[in-house]
Each structure stands twice: as C-alpha cells, then as structure tokens.
Amino acid sequence: MECKEEKNIKTFEPTISTRDSIKRVERVGLFKRLTRRGNSELLRGIESKLVYYPFWFFTFDVRVHRAFRLPDKKVMIPVAVDAVSGKAGFLEANLGALVDKTVEKPYIIPYTVEYSNAVNIAEQFCKLYVNREYHPFSLPDYILMEYQLIHPPYFAVNSTNEPADQHFLVLVNGITGSVEQKEEILLD
Image: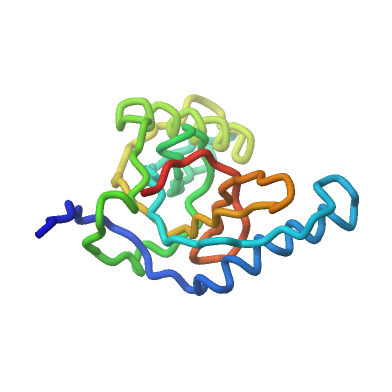
C-alpha cells in the first residue's frame, strides 16, 4: 500500500468551486479572442486542481515621527511577500479565517524565498510605503510584530488550445476568483 506524504499548513477555505475556476480561465480566453490578441481557437479548461501557494505574511508596528512637535503616529503595516517570486504587496486577507489543514505534498507549491530574504523584502516595501504615505520628519522606528508562512488556496487550471496543442497553467485565486498569473508549476 502506497503511503502519501502529507504536511500541515496554515491556509484559508476556498470560496469558489473547481467549476468556477475553469469558467474564469475561459473568460480570459474569450477576451483574447475578441481583441484578436490571442489564438482564435476556444480556450478550454482541461483540469483544475486545488493547490496551495506560499506567502510570507509580516506585520510591522511603525512609529512615525512628525514635524512641528506633533505627536508620533503609530501604524500597523501588514505586508505579504510571494514566497516563489519575491514580490511584495499589502496583506489582503483576514487572518482570523486561517485554518490548519493537512494536505498532500504534491499540492503544496514549494517556496523558494527563504525567511531571511522575505523579511528584507517586506521591510523595504514597508519603508517605501511609510515614506510615501506619512512623510516622516525623521527615520521611523520599525518593529516586526509577527510573521508566518501561509498557503492560500489557488486553482491551477491546465488549459489548451487543441489545434496548436499549447498547454499553459493559470492560477486562479481560490478566495477572490481572480485570475492571478500564468505559472510554470509541475503538478503530479
């Protein structure tokens, strides 16, 4: 009997179905056909698998020093770092909805950005944001309050244009349903 390797992760429950993920990808193909930028053949969703994509989530407590003897301003800045590409952005998730889940390893996308690199990326993003939004009088104080590796659900939709037999993989956010990106991810 074959034993599958499993791993415990922190994730969210998906709010869209497998069928909806395929429909989202078909809409992208329809748009390309209408604008004549893509292959004119119908884009068909062959298969949609629920996978878990890694993100580092950080929360910074920032004290912004202001001019003219105004009191310092304290702000919490949530930052997400894509643990595959290293891109940073704002945390757009309700961490109260996190669940612990046991998932088979082939459905967990491995991360390539280690914690030490991710925290540097997040801190730089946070500093740029604070400087742009709050215009501090002197250097702000940054304190990393918490961090964790979270794997939000995505649907990996393998699609093809049959005549040309062009395969590509599209990631559909399992929470918002938005088509996120084309990826080259190997799935078993």
